[in-house]
Image 1 (cartoon, one colour):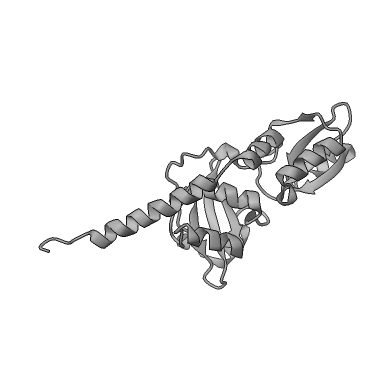
Image 2 (spheres, rainbow, N blue to C red; image 1 turned 180 degrees about the vertical axis):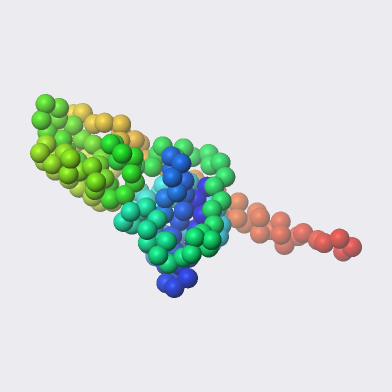
Length: 200
């Protein structure tokens, strides 16, 4: 499960999670921080992957540069703590580059040539397709409506699995997940309130 952390030297938050065996750092916007706090998620606590997916979808969680580089600059390795228990939400819902499976700096890309289709590529893999790309949009800007319009305007009928998976993420409903997280935190707080020690 993802873990929320707060920078020591900045009033900013980030999340560590594991995707395909790699530890990925997501930066959290102030709106994302507010949403997590309202759901009872605070630094050092794990939370459901569905919430992180929804933050990613809304642009409130995003990768920064190359993997963990900005985190490692601020912390010593022994300060990094991970707690990745099994999460019911599949990690396959996270958008990844269709070529190398990187989550960094993803773009929705139109490929032209013998095959005309839409794909999702990272910064490292986009140049290798340079001769055949016609349009490229940062994935953080691609909403459900924009994706539909993009496919229509560019007359793209084919899309690879990376785009299909992202479309599923945009179609997903996460409201119940947020509500469920808030309810679980309240129940735990109430249980602690009524706990009694030995001899009381």
